[in-house]
Image 1: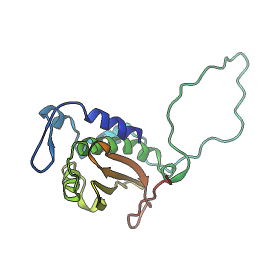
Image 2: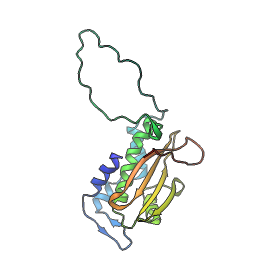
Image 3: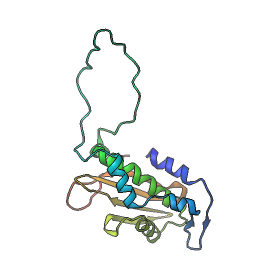
Image 4: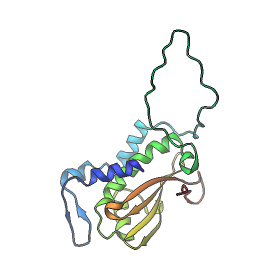
Length: 187
């Protein structure tokens, strides 16, 4: 979720103009900077760990330090959750979700009047096929959707809410196989 907010903050920078249909045009350097779906998949292959089932957190007592060793403060790194739907994602899906979340949030950030048709067009332009877009529905000034990103035995899906500056794109889990049905965390 923090990735989506950071992406939204970054997307607010720069200038652009809104067309008659409510889609904000991007400066040439911004449009060129947004990676295509093939580039995202290549980046996932290079930087994300291979697919594997989620690993449980370590359990049991901490091992004692060897004689003469000095205890130091460990570097604190964010870790993937271990419970709920997000805990069901493997390390590859967790890593890939951040890349997808950021690019989708940036693309939807400046969309005025985010109707289902406009959101679908943007998702298609980003390279996501109609078969991967689910439950595209408008509620007031917000359009909600799910994106099925399952591949290589993963369970990754994204839940999106396109609402201009209030746009949020967050990870969710889906069954490994069969029909797409997202599992959302309890809020």
